[in-house]
Amino acid sequence: MRREADVAIIGLGPGGATLAFEAARRGLEVSGFDVSRRYTKACGNATPAEGEAALYAEYFDAIKCEVNHFSILVEGREAAEVSTRRPLWVIIDKEKVVSGLREAAEAEGALLVYPPSNAPSGWVVVDARGPYSGGDYILLYRVIARTPRWEAGTALIDFSVSEGGLYWVFPDSHGVVNAGAGFLGLRQPGELRDAVKAYLERLLGPYEVLDERAAPLAVLRPPRLYGKHRIYVGEAAGLVNALSGEGIRQAVASALRLAEALHSCDVHPECSRKRYRTYTRSLEVEASLSKFLLRAVLRAGRRRSSEALEALSTGFWRDFLRGRLARALLRIPLAPRALLRASLMLASAVISRGSSLS
Ligand SMILES: Cc1cc2nc3c(=O)[nH]c(=O)nc-3n(C[C@H](O)[C@H](O)[C@H](O)COP(=O)(O)OP(=O)(O)OC[C@H]3O[C@@H](n4cnc5c(N)ncnc54)[C@H](O)[C@@H]3O)c2cc1C
Image 1 (spheres, rainbow, N blue to C red):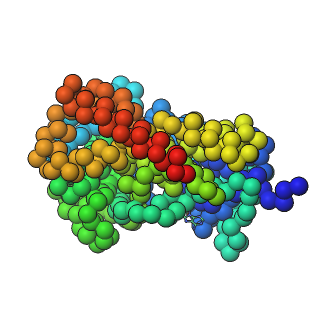
Image 2: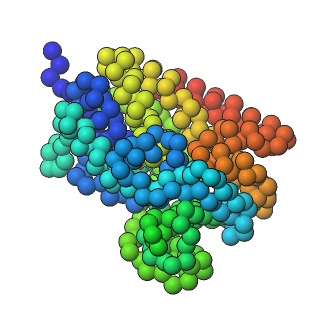
Image 3: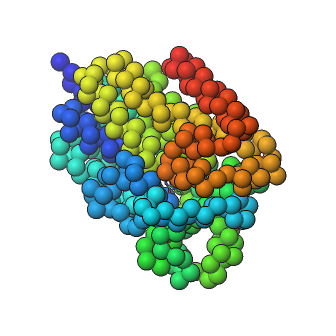
């Protein structure tokens, strides 16, 4: 007889908390551990309105506002305006979603512990520690700022090829924005803070800082769904869109798929790993593709990449913002598309090689 839980989850952010709830609700014995009882990680809090994370946010009454107008800039120059009748994004109260999921998991019988307890053991161990699960990450800085100069329902993304990253300004609540930046080159919080401050002052004039923080993001980590002793979900699995920094939807979606795999395989480790991989294929391809494209953009240099980004159609950006990267790429005209097809194939090849290694 097993003395451990069926599933032990390390890290109870959006990925780990979703898994705790979804696995416990399916009747599995779940134990979970997080270094912090309160989830407070800085984030843009934007997620596609049609994605899994938005569904949980709606369930926990944690949708703060909707976004249906987007300004896409490249090096500060306007590249595209996307406006839609139905919102493409929702801004969520991520902390409320995570605590809602943790409580719901406990109500379903999951045992969740916080320091000074030890990490629990389980038949299957899942690493959901996000960027902290090992490997390289970059630092992002975000500020919550009060300003009278921002239209409700509007988001701005400014790609800075020269700095290898982007600035964002998203709505947060009435008269309040969530803004920030992350670059491959800049690693010091002070440098990032100065860059964001200068950017916001140019854009908004004076503003009042309500909260400011830096947090890590595993941008270039290649997808790995499992190793010898652990299964990974969310950012720990490298499931982040490297071009946009989007990772909430992928964390929630991968956790949901893992709960389905564990349940349908009766927690048999080998079967669960394989089924999880099959269920998560599209997220894995999306993440690999985004990382490959980010590298390609950086390698092509500022002028060529900026021109290419500025030439992308509104349709491309609409799909991109919806979190449908592969579909967005198919909207690109023929010549570059051949290149993208090649990248798609390369991404799949990289994934297959990864699976034979793990
Ligand atoms: C500044 C910033 C802005 C972002 N903006 C957006 C955005 O607008 N939209 C979007 O989709 N994504 C955004 N992201 C990415 C998104 O936040 C992450 O990809 C997402 O939260 C990943 O969820 P996760 O559950 O995999 O990991 P995390 O959210 O990182 O959660 C990991 C959990 O593990 C815990 N933990 C860490 N170490 C240990 C340990 N040793 N033992 C136990 N527990 C541990 C942590 O306390 C945490 O609760 C942003 C990221 C940053 C940094």
